[in-house]
Structure formats: structure tokens, C-alpha cells
Image 1 (cartoon, rainbow, N blue to C red):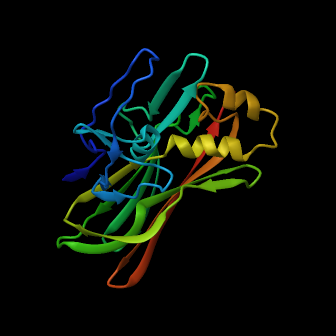
Image 2 (tube, one colour):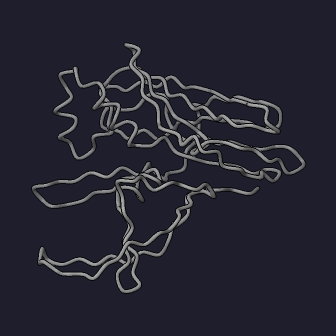
Length: 239
């Protein structure tokens, strides 16, 4: 089975100094980024720099493109990067959707999480046909949505410029529920009293107790025919 997972983007050199001012001769460096064989566009607000052959890229952009979450502790001057757990998931809680030879599966390690426990949710798009299939889709292929009991919802963004992929038999696209989406969802629910406490934590992606629905949607075209797969999981966060 051909498995497409998170690769290393490019070689990076990182230099640090003990808070000393250092002058560097740098210049803009035009590069393209690919994650999971899918091109990721660099936002206009970010710049890639070159300094004597070393490439410096925006940390937040790289981490979030690889489904990580960046937080900064100003008092400690510490940058933290967190990724969804890599532990083996038994996948006792899952949902599936099919259309032709393409299957979308949404999996969660648990149906109920503790409020101090990080959600581990991932999706897989599997092609089961016996011949190569060419598809066009936005970036990323799978869009996640979270919805709470009050009907408030938030989705990950998608770049509308279409990407063309040729799927070989048994090709699998795997992605994780972005922690950034959970953090943004906490911020979006700004009217709630717990917002300030949540955002001051080192782990702003932890959801408060309640019931949620996590939805995964994969939209693509085959021979100019639009197709869409969608499945969802009910998740509960305890106290």
C-alpha cells in the first residue's frame, strides 16, 4: 500500500544567540513548499530568507502546514510546538463514506476525552480502484469542521486553486485534525466565560467539557464531475 504521510519539507538551519543582537546579511528566497505531495502556498505576510546558503522559514507556517500548533510564552521567551499524538490508535470510534472507488474514513482514538487530554483524530482518503485515477482538488484535500452543542462551528480553510493528483491503486492520503482549528474555535467562542483562562494556558487547543461533532469533507473532481465525501463523529469532552 502506498502511504502518504507528513514528510520533511526542506533542510533548515537554525541559529540562536543568548538574546544578543546579531546582524545578518539576508536576502529574500523564493521557494515552493510541498506537504504530503500537495503544494502549500506561502501567505503574503510571510517571507523566506537566505543567509549564506542557509534557508530561514517562518516557524508558524511550517509547523501549521505539518498540522502542528505553535504557542509562545512571553515570560519565558519560549516557543512551543505541539503535534497530535503519534501513539498507535485502535480506532474504536470511526465513520466512513464511499463514492465509487474512493473511501473517506474519519477516526478517533476515543469517543470521550478528558478536558486535559489532547484529541487524536485523523482522516484517510483511500483509492481502491485498479487503474490510476486523476483527480483535481483544493488544498488541503480534506477539510475539517468542529461544531458544538449550541450550533457554533468553524472549519479549516482551503485554497481554491485546484491541484491535480494521480492516484495509484491503494494510495492513501492521511491527515490529522489540526490543533490550530481547536485553538481558533476556542477563540471564536469568545462570549464564553472560560475564554481567557483557556487562552492563557500553554495548550489553548484543549476544549472545555461538552459535546462536539467533528466532520471531515473531501471534495474533488474526476473528468470535470464534482464528487464529495463527508463523514462525522460525535465526540464528548468530560470534566
